[in-house]
Image (tube, rainbow, N blue to C red; front, side, top):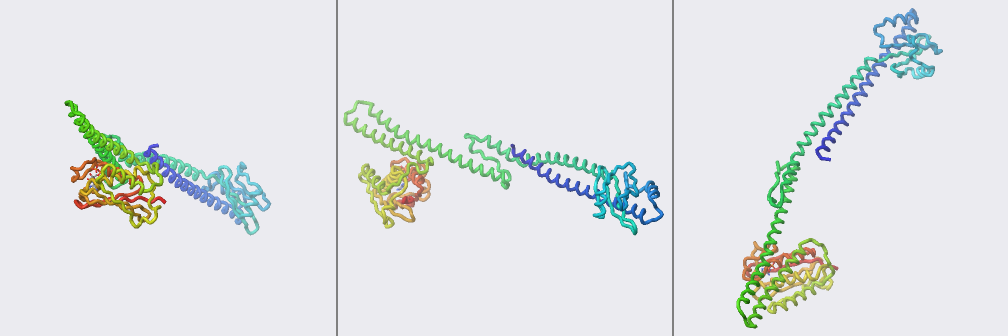
Length: 456
Ligand code: ADP
């Protein structure tokens, strides 16, 4: 059900309950008052008639009947019946025997002194009256035509007021709900118009104060994040195709030049070696791109087992040295490593080795002495690994950007590279629930620090 309808119905429900309670209260109190007043009048009447009959000697039942017949103050359909101590009727105006007064009722009156009850349309008041010599029971009965008419009218008025109020509440509630929810409908319309092509559109934030404005702001923030993510994705694809196209163009050029005329075997061999190098580079690049894509999607603990960090480090050192004989890698253990159990982490050894290769490779590549100091240490249940070089360094402003895919600092134009290694390193470290930090000074050197939780 639409919120607009739900609000309207809830509104009607609450008002109906309140109205019903107050109307029932009014009705009950009004009819109680009417009854009390009417019984009061019957009681006065009963007392008066009894007093006249008992206390005034000159008045007997015949005279009383005649007096009462012409009494203008008589109640509508008034009937009076008086019983003596032997339950004999000594006076009655109920000639048609409409009221049925049993001996039990008479006894009841004697016991209770007075009683009141209803018989059909008649309301009856019974009173035990004791004079000097007599003990009689008087019943005064009548129908409260005027009171009942008033009650009937009140009932009709209450029903009309109830129905009218509900109709008014329904329409005003609907109007109120439509007005209250209008900004949401407006927002839905605006959101419906947002597509990939116009992701830069923002929805109206209204007065900026209420909940709707808060929702609009939250939505706009989400749009901002989405737009940024799409931009990154678009840039990534553009950069990746550029990085792949460059070596392919170089390879094509080299092959075309070779094929322009007949060459000696030596020349073919040299050319093929150059092409082979470029193909290897291309292969390494596509592997890195693939790995970057794989590690970008959050797959927590994928194939993670307990691995030894020092093993991965030795393997990385070996692999780099087999490729670059002039790189010098110095591995040290800090004082925190007092137990070989502190060298284990939960992870994937190929990924961890990739991290080490990238960091060691960078450190050697970007320093004149091609030397890196690697220190393994542990602190607070964490393995801490420092990679320190005395190379070209990175300026402060670029430090936070070097982890972005394809970003390369300005001072590395003369160095080969694609700017993917560090984003891959960051992804892998995050997958292993670790952190990476970098401090650097231009022309002095750089220190990368990785922290990984120890697996016991
Ligand atoms: P690549 O080395 O292929 O350019 P990376 O992602 O590994 O790509 O590194 C990104 C950038 O970070 C590098 O281009 C370089 O500018 C900077 N960088 C990384 N490591 C070092 C380092 N040890 N010394 C100086 N600059 C570094």
